[in-house]
Image 1 (cartoon, helix red, strand yellow):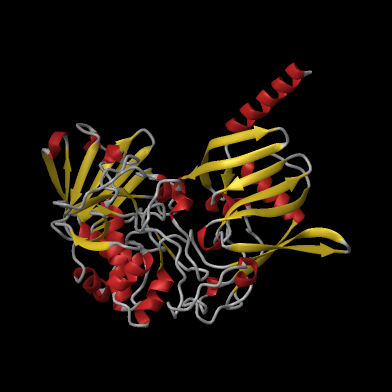
Image 2: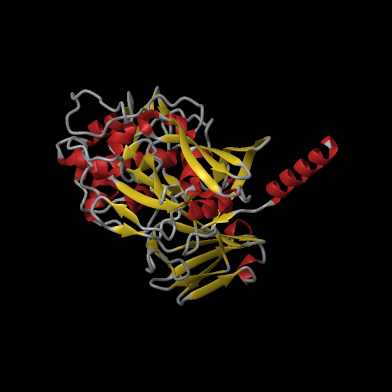
Length: 470
């Protein structure tokens, strides 16, 4: 009997580990899955779109004598599904130079639109092509952002690979930062908020100077939300001025560059470094994003707090400050099973086991007829409780039905009973994003209340200093 059980368990584990889960087109890798009798514990899952939480964790960058003039960024395809392009269409707005061959010893001036594929003769002597435009922007027809063709400053490098062409933009760091700020925020934000975002964006990319993921392309990151969105919207003069006013400035802790994590909207609280792992990042503390900093902290009952609006919370008028959604037990069974790749049976209950700093949910248990599932880490929890197709009601009354994960992991669960039977749950939540570091809308409100960008940075990243890199 023991041999049969062992054999079945082995088959189950092998089958599960071999199962490729595709949840709303997000590739996941299961790093650690343990089974104990009737329990499955999901401890750690790394997502391609969450690499900002996992890459370079042990990297420490000393700020002393650091020089950084240019950055290299991988440009993803138009829908951000891949770094590989079937072909590249260069739009002629000015004369462009195509440099190719060994050490780019060959050069051709092109006066017309150009399509380059892996079979192009430009790749005959080398797998790398360099495209330049005499310090003018290069427009790539085959890469669209929000349906538009944006120009890229700097040079474009094309790498021929067996999967397609990889596009890398080498650009001056200040130009890069401006195109990040314009894509993350917009010019309606106060100048001090734009400056704070500029310093954070510059710090974030500088810390990834030795990025392992794109090492073969000498790139620091890509232009997706896995790092920082870049050149989705081209910067205007207001944003360029804000970046220029903070030229070279970065955030440090004990003379080291910090991880300047940021997100859209808080529930009123942020969380600390523990959502990224066990390595201490003392500057990432939980803070209350509120008007009166001298007011006593009162968060004894998070369930009560998250169901109401606090007048002192700076972001209490933003749509994602508060939200709620109902999930039936049939919907829960479908999304949880889809997420883990295993049918746990009819779900009878979901419990919140642990909360982290600021009230963030860090562990839940899903009770199924066949198995009970323990899920840890905010991103796992948000994606396991996938609300796609359901109406998430926002703070302003708007309804969102196209979200493939919960807006945040700051939430409370209320059971719903119909005709005396458990029907499902109602989730009361707040905030949008991972919730660690700087809230962008909180940053905006602090700037409107008179905070300088230095004060804003100190508010969200404790005991830090601002330094200048060359």
